[in-house]
Length: 499
Image (cartoon, rainbow, N blue to C red; front, side):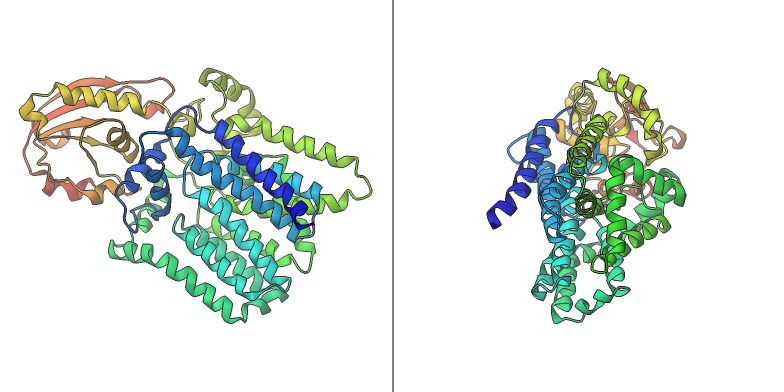
């Protein structure tokens, strides 16, 4: 019996993993993925803008050479694990086969969750561990072994080593428990042990941040003061509908209503509402709380299964609608269409489903979308910089270094070329000048500090352009600057760019 109960969760998880394995490795390396890889090749307990887990996983996938397939397989594994846990949570909430199938379809094809499983990023870890923490929490509330608190603590602690937003999740669901009758489960030595375990796991990164002046706080402040789109509460809620998929949101809403109506599950509904409220108050990006949606889909599957008990003919119709709704928006979160085809698709579909609402940064957008544009052009940029570097006289080449404006450009040069590169952006600033004097610089998308008269001479030696890239990085000037008038080490503090 137990084996049959697990057949659907295992099948759903494996199918989701295989789907992502086939759909993920296209277009090219994403800007942030390149940054994660380079950070992971410099292992430490933390980085300016992130904990260490994602960089280590990204770099580990590239130990045997460049492989987009292996990199994206990491994200695929977390997506498969997430859908497996969704099905287990359905069972724990009292659902059966139809509830698991519906919840698995939603969990696999929901746009924001599919995006987390498509490319390597900090949210992919929470895609698995947030619902896993709730799975153990539900078991405890139902009278299960309180030692399972240790699993909750481990899930939260490990998630914190991937993305700090899990702290909002943990606080929201803890508050949900405190205002519900189930608060009694908190009065356990195993809850205290779980809290200690989570802190111990997360502590090394906290210590690193403290030792470096909590640069992540500076990054967040900078993002909220110009870079990021700040949504009103109403716009934030609307964005949740869009990133979840307008039709699949119905399943999530059913799940929320079902949880709030049930005495044993009300604390989960409270947790979700508190999470969204605190994210809105913090001006967080709209996708920051999205790892919570597997929980709502699990509850939604259980609710719809119960409500269709006397009208079972509606179940295959409901599952088919969910499947078609998920497939319709897949091109936005899986690189499955040729570029020109996607542009045509986006022009036809995007405005109709409100995809413009989901922009997170104040940058000129293209019909490729920012994510897809940021998977293009990186090898070509690195090749252009490599040609400039190789054309330098040997004496200049020995002391030359490329300077990039942001971590995407710097990481592409570091990953795809042999040119030494530095930058003032985020973690690259802390890595410093690597001892380069700055007397010969290849300035990528810069002007050799023309307004400050930093160099005795400068020449534009190349212009980088590539199809389908972000507009601000197209027609990019590449300069060679010689004869710095002030040592680079003294200039370096002024180039810090945390955002």
